[in-house]
Amino acid sequence: GAGVSQSPSNKVTEKGKDVELRCDPISGHTALYWYRQSLGQGLEFLIYFQGNSAPDKSGLPSDRFSAERTGGSVSTLTIQRTQQEDSAVYLCASSEGQGGLYEQYFGPGTRLTVT
Amino acid sequence: KQEVTQIPAALSVPEGENLVLNCSFTDSAIYNLQWFRQDPGKGLTSLLLIQSSQREQTSGRLNASLDKSSGRSTLYIAASQPGDSATYLCAAYTDKLIFGTGTRLQVFP
Image 1: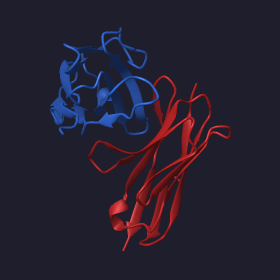
Image 2 (image 1 turned 180 degrees about the vertical axis):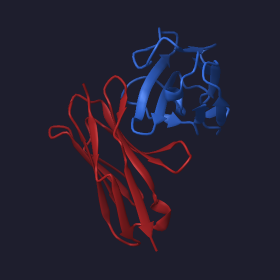
Image 3 (image 1 turned 180 degrees about the horizontal axis):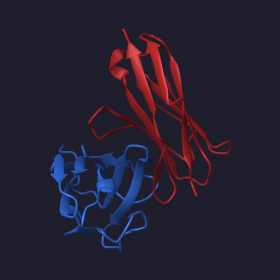
Image 4 (image 1 turned 90 degrees about the horizontal axis):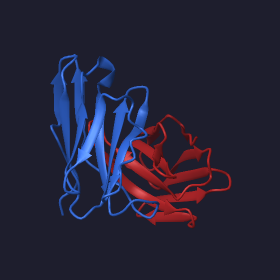
């Protein structure tokens, strides 16, 4: 079946502009995660959603970052007033549930470049 | 705070060799440990997931072991092939996945 999809695959934006990144999880997966992968920082957790519960935002690096998940499916990560240090690959993952029993399946990522 | 370390950072081997990638974690209170493969410019592909109650998992030429008490996991790749060339990441799950920095593997013909 279809895997996790993300759009756009690449995004170049000017410093100070807002960007929106989209994630379509695997159908039926209740948990959705956002990660960021940047040079020198490795892969870091940003936020996750589980069903209708309040999201865990503990990994968001600043209040310029926000995310929402509509209807328990598609998620959008928004970065306001982008900075050059926001340049990274943003990865989305989904799983059947939240917790240690479930594998996370990753999308191909969105490469964000802030000029 | 959970920290995950992978050794070596890079590895280059001739085709056919058996090899071991190492992963260590500081907090043994994990629910599972997951191994991923990442090809250049691509997302992550899940290889193996070991639950905290398990000692190992096998998939084809891959075998992953977990020793929670010592905070270690190893990924064993048998009879390596050039197609195995990629970056291998381990991640420990407590309330979220914490990733290691990866081992970049190159298998040459």
